[in-house]
Amino acid sequence: MAEIKILIISLSNIGDALLCYPALEPLWQAYPGAQTDVLASPRTETLYRSDPRFSRVWVLEKKSNIFRQAVQVARLSSQRYAVVVDFRNSIIPVFLFGARRTPILRGSAPEGIHRALVHQALVSKLMGKPLSGSGYSAPGFPFSADDLRFARNLLVPGKTPVILVPGARSHLKRWPSERFAVIADRLIDEQNAQILLVGEASEQPIVSAVMAGMRHSATNLVGKTSLAQFMALLSLAKLVITNDSASLHAAELTGVPSVAIFGPTDEKKYGPRHPQSIVVRRTMICAPCELALCPYRHECMELIPADEVYSAAVKILKKSEDPRRG
Image (cartoon, rainbow, N blue to C red; front, side):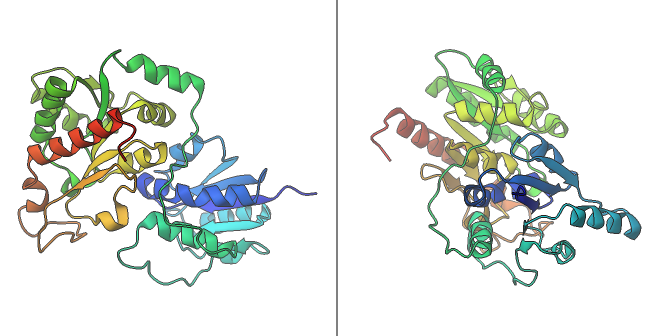
């Protein structure tokens, strides 16, 4: 009997790709032992190469000439995939003959529905089963014993590990660095916290600004961990304090609660689903706007006080100390 082959066509950004992960769990359960390949973007290639559940990672030739794109589609077609899940809603599945595939014409995603649920509903429809529920569960992310050992060696015994993520791809999603510094110092002074600052290598100036504003020292891990090592570190953390970024969705996969700071984007679509997580935002007539440029003065983020974020963090930490509290 030939091995079943599944192709996942990924979204372009790491955060969006991570939001698709919960939808893959029922697919893998329905096809145990299947070979799963993925057509990734250049940005998400590292994500899938870090996950041993993907056998082959194709990289989308989107910006190449039409001939190279046609060659890539022909190569994909030659693989004879039995199931194709296209989160991009592209035309590529039309050329993958014989595959059971998600529909090309599916309309816009419903407003106010979390994107993780939209992706889950897409896969459920493909499998001919109703969505089995909208509750949160952490599907996890595979990391090795070496990754976990690496993460444990970063932690200070007796301290409460708290991860801060002051960066984000869009500057409009970033809460001011000086306020991250304020809450970092307070968590160290009042909650016995070890502060670990993470982000992509390009976000080093943002993290440096946070550390420059702190009275205490923090662990700077920007650009110093692989994705699997970062996931292992998340699994050991008590709390993540983050802007709307890929790290928020990574935290969701590992089951760590977060304080998620939102401004121009909609937390109903992209916010945390962990039952202990807390979204902090300002209620404003212009937010969430989901615009690439702010026509005002970025008040949706600038007006969020450090005290509010700190209070949310303490509330989550107190709950983690008492397992009887939900």
